[in-house]
Length: 439
Image (cartoon, rainbow, N blue to C red; front, side, top):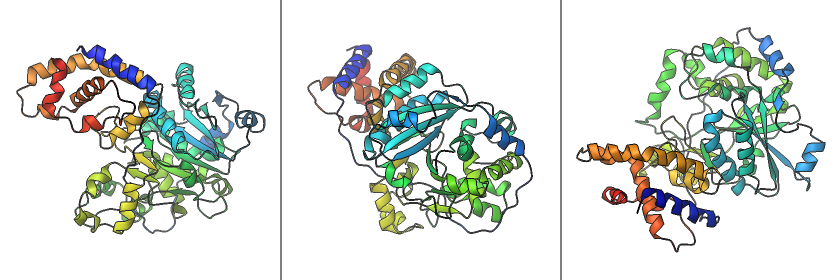
């Protein structure tokens, strides 16, 4: 059977299989809680703050709270605002994040999803992303163009890593959203497996916290994450490091009311401009340092990162952690959000990513599935040539992407199925079986 035919069988099956079987899954995140005292902020950019407040935003949908929200939310449900910030490279994973979030979210609320961007997300892409959630009547997606705010700062920043300048829009939320007292901020390299509304109400606007978020258990000895934390030793002293290791930046609840009352956005900008040369995790460092100690840990299972599967893969490790075993197991078995944290663990780039099958389950329900299949198919001629030239190389079985071919092949043979547990087959395929696709 030709590979192109298999691809189209695959698409055909999924057009009629909207009701994919959901699976319960497990996982956790990073960063420890510490103590420290006051910070010293260098005087800088009042101009930056003024620029944010005065700049005219190019908004795709109206911000008119009374009129527009009533149209979008005819049942007058309580509104939960959720902000995202990404560039055009993350539109496909954003579709998975949006869909899986709303699929698991309580129907008792109306979800206003916002994307703050730097002008590179075209109207066509905006419309496609909006269409991806149109099956959820209790949600609306809005795009706000804030291009230009961080161009100069981004050029000066030393450690850009795999981030984009769009992540810094997280520090602008008090001025971008004056109509809200609280807002959720989330990354889009995630898949949701639980109800986001619970997290929103774990922080109250009248509490004395600026932000709420999630830390994680670490191994007491031989923890692989301590090597990553060593990067901070070069540029931050001990007291400063204690302020930085509190919560992860991938999922945050912001107390906008409190942030505005204490003029914290101005301090965000001042700290950013004074420390561009030594930031390690971009906006996460800014949020942790400036908001400390008014940071609330929200729950054990709100955000869990895939690498914790590896970290706690034995009873011995579970009993050698900074959390008790029951809390770790609860987080692993009941995650609200799974975060594919890090540059090399993105399921849309690597089919063999840990817990990637859950991400693909949600992708299969979005209007981005065909685009992903088409882009993937273009690569396979190269992979087949690579196999022919390297089939005797002992390291070749590590060439993970070809495993996906075996899954499609098996899926095509099972034409009579009604529900598919997406990618469960691919996880256990023998490598030699994969190559049968090419025969």
